[in-house]
Length: 221
Image (tube, rainbow, N blue to C red; front, side):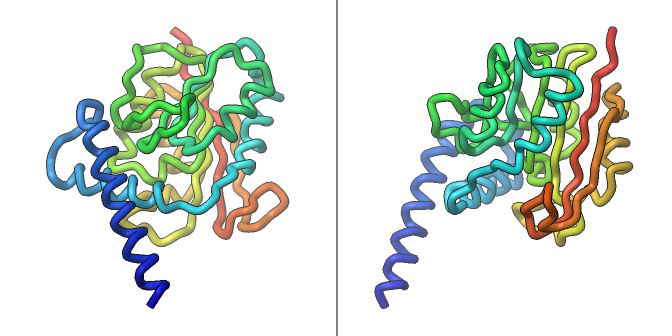
């Protein structure tokens, strides 16, 4: 009985939190139709109810960026970061400025924003970093276009996504292969310059599903 009461209270608290955040986000959402509103609500509910998420797996991809291109002195955008783990790791690599966004941005350093509709000018960031966010997109082509748009010419876009899973209402897009993900980015003048595929629960992948990591470079003007 007590467990049922706790579950009910949690559900009510989640519904209230989602409603409040939806009201805050309305001006920045990329669409206002009913289907998109439902999508955002489900993503918010998932994020709000997510248990402790340390995100230290993001270190592997950040280390690859740093080793190959350097992070020191660079401007960085972290997309869908949920917490400050990757932000602080970029800070430890001496990035000059780090901007972070998430639908449920509730930290001082994380802006509440829709990744389908980034509120930044073209060519704003040296590095655009997206770890375990692209698979949640409503329209992956739109998100990839936005990631490319805000990267400077010659800039880096780094992506990590799970693969080989059954899509659901919240985990929506399985890119399946590095080649498919690369094709999506090549349509936005971004070239694949490094990639890896890691099996589940491997030394470089703590997740219970396979992942792919890719680094793209936006074409210079």
